[in-house]
Image (cartoon, rainbow, N blue to C red; front, side):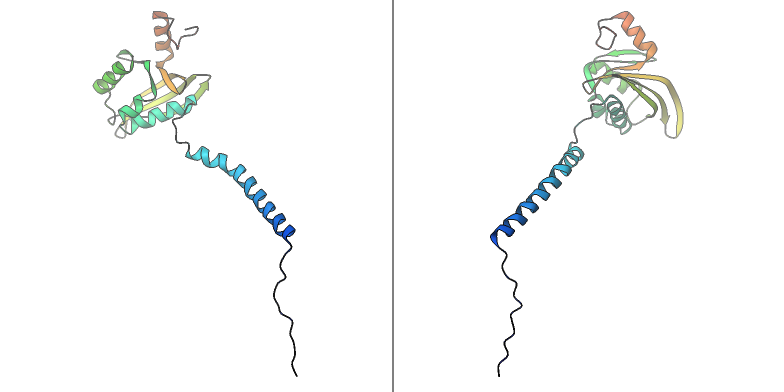
Length: 174
């Protein structure tokens, strides 16, 4: 006597069901990619910052790393930097000033109290040589346009420069 057991094989799914599942899978993957891609591209962008406070912080980071050319890359070619020893006009004068008076890598600055008002970033900067505090600038001020610093100094130096030549790009109405 022979007993016949039914096979436990699965019945094939109808083509409509297979297509329906494929469409749902494709739709789910499409939605997932649409949600995740902007985050992935944003984290991989890696380009230089353009938001004023981010530009000031990134420039300061490059300076603190001793990367003078990286630091200067955040300045426009016609930027003005004012410090107690005077104002430097243009990227080459700024490079010469920094090399002569404050070599990168010797002094580092910690920025705090950053406030952004349009293109103007104000801050406090503490300068250290080694672990010793050697300077505090309470009224630091940078003007950032299109991702580049066009003025670096203090409110007093900004007023001085604008009184000297009010047509400069960082001056009100300039």
